[in-house]
Image (cartoon, rainbow, N blue to C red; front, side, top):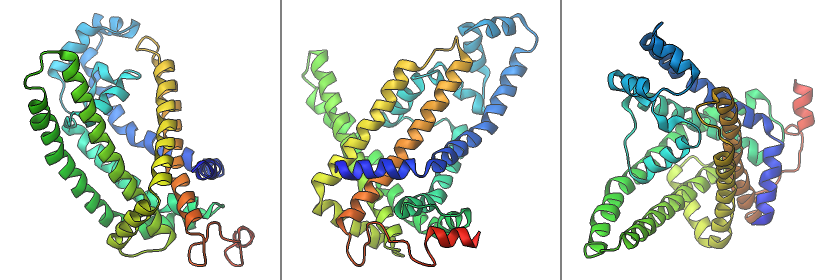
Length: 328
């Protein structure tokens, strides 16, 4: 497990351009709605005295006035977007099953489609653990896009069932039953906290299975996503301790990044610093996402390193890096 984690770190380090590319794709996806929001704020402020007050610092009176009349992307301009509050708001939105602002649905959908498209190329690069050209990378992206879309339909159905059925049962039915006669607020809070932990554990387990389904699909060149999903379940069942321990270790790395961001994120009084620190946080979050994929791929290849599942292929012509250099 430790060896797979270290191997994953090495693979991510040797594929730094993936971190930069994914960060840039995230940034570019955010530019259009940011420009729209900028225009809405500029139109609302105009040349008023409120504009001068807003330029000097946070003006909550104007902010509330803007939100009352805002529509579309403007509804996302809430205090919760500032610094670490945005991370907490996103976590709360998932845990409490709060819906997205309708204006963000298309943006989030586009981001998901882009992630699905890039997933095949990213996993292929991390599994090979050597340089590949742009043509090979995007060829892998195109090859796996529709296969991962099929897998995504299955994943979406399962996640929908968890949020549509399991979440209400846990937090409406079960929580109400267990705290019906409770008079101590701390006890009710601990019960709800335990239910959150149980629900998140189930979500993480499902996420783990789908992670290895994608890895097995790419490494073994599987066409059937149902077959890849069944193979993923078999792998996790046969290696539960290492698979779960590695997932938890990666999760700790993510929580460390979140914790550092919580300490470093400035408030609304320093907008440029907040933007810079926020972008550093996004870069580190992308790196952790790649670390999840790289270390899990390393664990899978290490466990099934025999004739059919080579842990790290010996470069041979015409697939060696030297051959790619000659081709270029």
